[in-house]
Image (cartoon, rainbow, N blue to C red; front, side, top):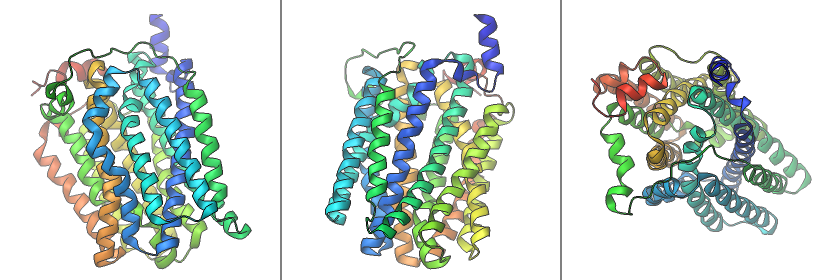
Length: 429
């Protein structure tokens, strides 16, 4: 067994030796493809219905609000209830919401009704996110956790390529057939159903269930755990602020239709270019993981992310815009990889749900709330100034965090034993 563990750790596909991780990984990809297809289509449909940039921002806000309201509860639930059971329920809810979107596409959607469905989706994802992240360490041995995280990140990026691309093609096909968004939403229902079926087959290696009495202290334990560890606070806070101000992806419908003039097909390519870069980088990390200077590489990746946003914002060239989005995705993949390793390894299993919930609300803020910020500033200033200013702020935030969080900057190895020894007790120097 020891020899097999060493072979797993050395192999670029070590995590896939484990059946339950394989099933989980496939289910996760199917569900994420469905999410990406759905959100891409909703964004296009809303902009077609209303023509207002602000409404694109409201899509993000409707999904983020449940995160902000429920993250303490959802984190505790993920530590007290089997996480695989939570994931199955959340997938079922998302499948039902997709069926509602399908009905609305056929019957004639109103923006207000779509916002209500998005809020329900946000509630499901508020409970899903802490369970989704925290379940991975219970599916593989510790020696291949970094590889499992890298493959999970690759799966995310793969889904973000496939989903928007299929959505763009489906939207174009629906328009040509007079069926609007119906083909896309039909596929989304089927994908969520398939993901649910596979997730029900996954078995955990053993989750440490928290049995402490419910109190303010147990609800806030994850937040306090992060705040006492500069490495975690710096990594998560960096993601929050960087992507909050760098939420250019929400404005891609505006760029595709009004600035680059490339239509729905070009919109799908723009959306996919970001994730092609992320996938390429994430796949490299599965074979060549970061072994040294992890903190410095995290900070550099966020700075590169900000610079690429600025270039994209200023570009009126479709190829240059695609290239800038590719670099943005690559930089984001490095950031996700380092941050995920830090959070998953340093946190003990009985707290991973609550810590994951805090991490999830930060990610939700940086993505969904960032979409709202981008839509709002574009409504005030126009899309180009909003994106350029956001990119410059992101670059400045990376420099600020490099100075303000020296422990994060000095993180070297991502070896599990080393990270636990140095940072789990919160007394590292």
